Length: 152
Image: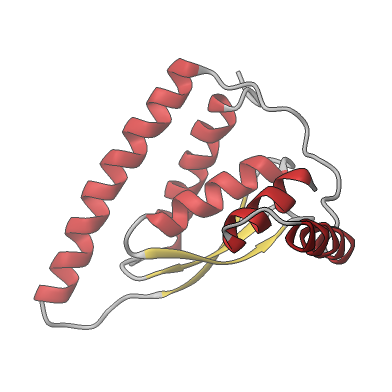
């Protein structure tokens, strides 16, 4: 709440009693309307596994960027579709990271996440077969699970 009041005062540009009281009311209203909820379990970051994940992600960015560029430059039909990718994890942190890595990679976009079944629904622009998309996303899941200490 204190942080929200400080931001409120910074936005108004001056500290006055009226700005302070209105900031407290605005912060209280926001915290009541949008409660913070529980925090996920702590994550234990492994540096070497995180470096492997970063390298794999960088390589995937290069390869997928080239695939999308070739698709744009070469005329012909696009092989696209939505693929359900079941994951092994039950961690919302791992699901979040894998879904974002998938969306950040050119040519793929996470359309939906079914958290109870740990399934990502991925729109793939260049996927000729669903196995390719599933294998790529599941490989990232494996790397993320190793990086956050869920898997050895």
